[in-house]
Amino acid sequence: MKIEVLITNGNVRPGLAIARSLARQGISFIIVGDRPGSLAFRSRHVTHTAVGPDPGNEPDAYFEFILALVKRHGIELVIPVLEDSLLPLLEHRSELEAHTRLAAAQTDALRNVLDKRMNLALVRELGVDCPGEYALESTDQIPDMIETLGFPIVLKPQGSPHDKQLPAFPFKVLFANNEQQLRDYLDQYCSDGVYPMFQECVFGTPHSLCCFAVNGEIVAMHEYRSLRTTKGQGVFRQFVPNTPAGEVGARRMLKALKWDGLAHFDFYIEHGTNRLRYMETNGRFWSSVAGSIHAGWDFPLWVYRYFRHGEAPVPGPYEIGTQMCWRRGDLAALFHYYTGGPPPTKDPSVGKLKATLQYLAAFRPSVKSDLFRWDDPLPEFADHWSLVRRGLEAAFEKGFAKDPTRVSTPGQ
Image 1 (spheres, helix red, strand yellow):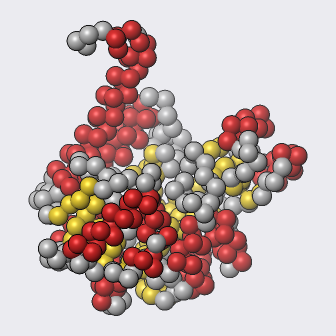
Image 2: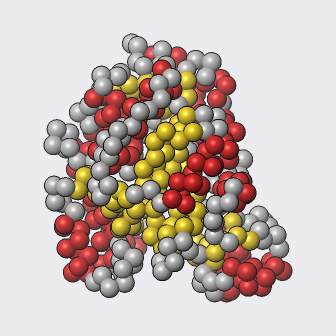
Image 3: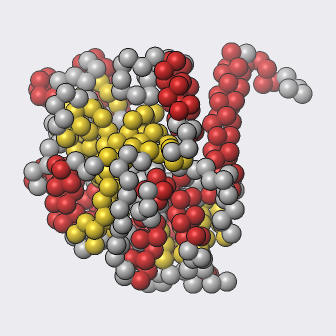
């Protein structure tokens, strides 16, 4: 059976958004997930699915699985969605591209954004404002690092935990609020003398630039700010005019890398000063790409047309002020606040009642949902059920932890 496109990561929102986009155009595709209940598999627009190995835990087996699908179905284009699937395909790119095309920027350019330390060095050379950084080589330097960065100090891995070329750490980000906490983190995670990145902590509103470039020249770029977040991820977002400093920095960096395809810039606008501070760039689809599609910029279709047929995007207008919501994430942020976590917004005056009213207001018709479609409702329900299931599992495990003798009782 001939299928034109393979999409990875059917278990996440952007995988579903890509599938829906291509389905609207009548483009044949197969979408791969690491479990039978993957999110995109619930969509009525998805006809061909495949369950394969987890790309993060079994990268070599994952590549062989993708290559076998490519050969079996005569696939012309592979669209990677997340870094865990991109990395094994990138490692074997020449072998893969003997049979198909990988919808991704050049390997050297991708390696730059995958390695955050390398990327920050480049953007600093290009005059982009970044948080202060300290390259720790010995614990003897801790007093100097504290004096340089101040507290809190941010600890970050240099890249994805699935990247074989970079040191791996079992955390995404840590905040050291004092010297003892910093030393505890180093004892726990750096006993082998390999250190993560250490950065100055920036307080502000998270913004993102969503770009499409052709040979280093950006042909489409829009910006959104995250009004509500959970665990660092934007759940309620709004389109805003492009920040001039962010736009200049993005153009300089993608030109230097001769970038092709998608790029997603993250930065903060500092409270009080409105100073832009660059965070990172991802060379892949962003989680809220469905919001871009809602606004009229169909990035998945552009990726298909550019990497399959060489057609550069010709973007039309989009509406500033458009709001987008990941409803399950928004609910999780509210629940986390009710159970002792931080408020979903950066506004310290927001109490639980106001936060609840803000959550409910996101159901007004003008707010675009990342997942819900009247003609395709099941993925939204499945996404919410995953939150409920996780809560039930956590409560169940907590109950057994309190009364461990129950596990040995027959019939329970």
